[in-house]
Image (cartoon, rainbow, N blue to C red):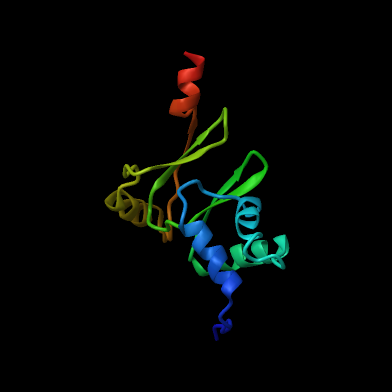
Length: 132
């Protein structure tokens, strides 16, 4: 049975903070953004809610970049690019993993694929301009 959670303005604000940006924020970024409006907000509350949102599938984790986990409110399948110079995380809207190929892999290897993530790493356009 699914546990029912009571409505919380802080929880809603945390989710909105993740969904309102394409910067793929960290828990610290979310905390700093919301702290002025919610002075009693704790970093622990941010982390707990982010963990619950990940578990629910409401947000996704991009993984750890420069020592901090990054989050995305866009849960539709898409690819991410991480800059090895500045650590920015960018969305890449191209489809690299074809659904037909995934179905073929499932059949060929006798498995079920629930999701597929592709993470590209390199140098972002801004950093690339600086090193040229």
